[in-house]
Image 1 (cartoon, rainbow, N blue to C red):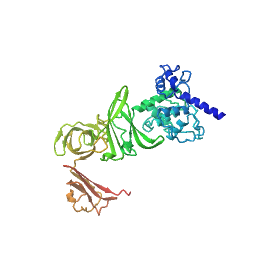
Image 2 (cartoon, one colour):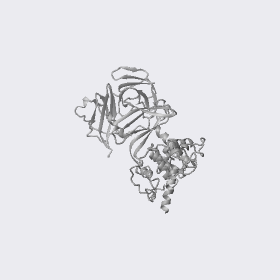
Image 3 (cartoon, one colour):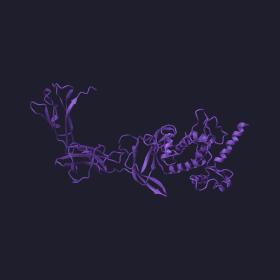
Image 4 (cartoon, rainbow, N blue to C red):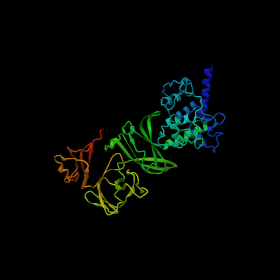
Amino acid sequence: MRKKLLMIIGALLLLCSLPLSGTFATSTKHFSDVPPSKHFAEAVYDLAERNIIGGYPDGTFKPGNSITRGQAAAIIAKLIKLDTSKLKDPGFKDVPKANGYYKAIAAMAEKSIISGYGDGRFGPNDPITRAQMASILVKAFDLPRYNFNSYKSPFEDVHRGVGHDPNILTIYRLGITTGTSPDRFSPNTSITRGQAAKMMKATEEAKSQIVTVKASDFGWDQFKMYDSNHKDTGIYQAVEGKNKPTGGVTDRIHLVPLKEGDGTFKAALVYSGNPDKKFYRKYYVHVKEVNGKLKLKLERTEDFLPSPVAIGVENKGPVQNISLSTMDGKKITDNMKFTKCLSFSPSDCVDNDETDSEGKYRNVHIVIDQPGRYIATIRFEDGKEVRYGLEAVSSAPSFKFSFKVLEERPNASLDLGANYDIGKHILPKGSEQIAEITRDEGTNMFHVVGKKAGAVEIKLPDHKKLDLMGLHVRVQEMGPIIQVEIYELMDTHM
């Protein structure tokens, strides 16, 4: 008798949580206890109009009543149009098949959207907490998974990065809900029917603006790389998603629009650059406001964008001017715009100078807009000129060129000093084709003049210097630009 009574009570609760049918439901689109001034009113009436939720026979909605875990499961299952026809029994000992919420709970459990307690119960009649609702919404709607390594939580009671906390961070970042105060979310507080309606509606709206790029769309099983840190991060955010609600591999990327504008997005199946288009995708990202909502569109492209290149000038003095020409001598400009920078990263100092307290800098940055080989001639304030070979290479899937920079140094010298007797030196056969290598008579001073790209090992069989293995000469060339290096080869005992 008691079991039968509980089943009847469960059915009645379900009736109150789901929409009423027939003419009565149509006539109760206005609830006496939900005036338009309430912050949740719009959400309540929208969901009621769509027969997602319903009111009570007395014409009320009772927005201040708690919503249970079973009621939440039933409503969300209907909201996301979950198939409840073919079900696997989730095995919750307090959710028999006769339970009014059984189908919704079973369907959501099978999709790993919900789970039970450690003792084998689901607790269908327990009030659902704010934290539990956050997790259900994130999993049910496949929302972006913001993580605590990249995004800071404003809530003192949401900081662990485990359990419900990442999902709370997600719904906060998407603007689905706020905290109970600026610094507290109150994750264990139960949620009311009015609050639940507002959160569900807000989740729908947030999801409708997100564009999800799936690896399966390209015949891939996952993304190994995607661009989440670019200059246009103010336009949108790229947040990874997983192939399972509880985790797994990154097989989808959620693009969340933030404001109007244009940006770029790239993703790839492999970590390194690969020119084969089947391994990467590149897009322009366009975000526009349409009917009060941000709409994000992707435009596939193979374009490369103007790219900054860093040229090292440390200890050479202030730069006065830079001219640029092609490798075959065609002049592009006598006055190339440049910025001063301490960083070696080409992405830094693109628009503004960065110097130390004395006005010194390590690099100058210029922007190249076409692939190819160039010669940059830098004139310093002391009148000295140095040429640099630049090679801009298209490197998929990047939007930016990759660069090789070669400072012109056609000759080099190395003095091993007078403290060691290094004896004779031996040049390998054919070394004269790579470089002219000479030694001042009676000294340990070597001179090298480069001829063509290659390497030479100079042997010192009779030397007395500890750990010295010999000398190494390297010659690099880029068109007419030749760079020569000579240095000691030391035994590091590794």
